[in-house]
Length: 385
Image: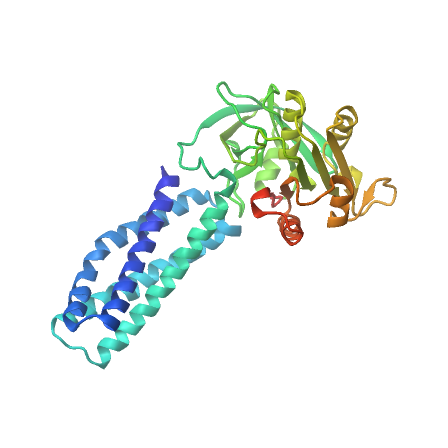
C-alpha cells in the first residue's frame, strides 16, 4: 500500500501547489480584482487537500526508505523537510494573510510583497516535488509496469554459497512454493537476522542470476564492507531470508532481432539468467555478450559462459579485460570499434546494458551517438552496495 500512497500523494501535492501558483499568476495578470479576491479567499480551502497529501507522501516515503539515507532515496528524503517547512512556515501563513487582505480590498505594497514571497515559495516546492517525482520514477524504473501491483513476499532459506570470482559470492536460495520469474528480473532481499543497518538500509535489490528453469534462486554480489553484506557473508546454510518480487522488465522479448548484452562486473547476473534461459529454450536469434572486467579472476561465471559459447553457435562471448597482462582476448573498455568488430552494424541489434552507473551511462551515450534508437537500449544499474 505505501508504494501506491507515495506516488499518488506526491502527485496530488504537486498538482495542488501548481494549481495555487497558476491561479494566482493568471488572476493577477489577466483577470479582474473581483477574480483576484475570489482566488485568494478560495486558496486556503485547498490546504485541506494539500496538507494531508504532503503528510502522506512524507510518511510513506520514510517507510519505503527502509532506513536508506544515500543515493536517490537519500536525496528524496533530504528534500522532504524543506518541502514541509516551506509549506507550513511560508505557504500557509502567506495564503491566510493574503486572503484576509483581499477580503478587505487592501491591495497595497505589503500585499504584493507577501504574494511575491508566496509565489517564490510555491515555485520552490513545485521544483522540489518535481525532482522527487523524477527520482521516484528512476527508482522504480527497474520494476515499471508492475510496481503498483501488490508486493509478493516469500520466506525462504539459504541453501548454500560459493565464490564465483575474486570478491564475488553467489548465494543459492531455496525456491519458495509458487514463486516464478522471468529471466532478467530482480527481487528485494531482507535478512531477518540482520542486527545493524547501514546507509543503504536493510533491503537490497538483486537481479536473479538463475534461470527460471533452475531448481534454486541465485543472487550474486561483490562483497563490500556494509552491514548488510557482512550479515549476508556470515549466514550459515538454513538461515532465513526474505524476498519480495519478482520485479523488472529487463527481459528478452520473443522477437528475432539480434541481441547484444553489454555487461560490466557484477552486471553479468541478469544476463546469465537470460542466456541460460534462451539456450535452454533453443536460441532463435543471435546473442552477443560483451563482458568487461579488470581481469579474468574478477569475472563471475566466465568459465561457464565460455562453455556455453563454445557449444552454441548463436551465442558469442566477447570477454575484455582492462588490467590483465596475461589475458589473450580483447583488452580495454568496451567501445564502438569493438562492438562493430564482433556484432556488425551497431544500429541493428537491441542492446541490454548492466553494470556500474558510470559504465552504463558511458555505454548509453556511446550507443546514442552511434545512431542506435533509444527504444533499442534497455539498461540496469548496479551500485555494488
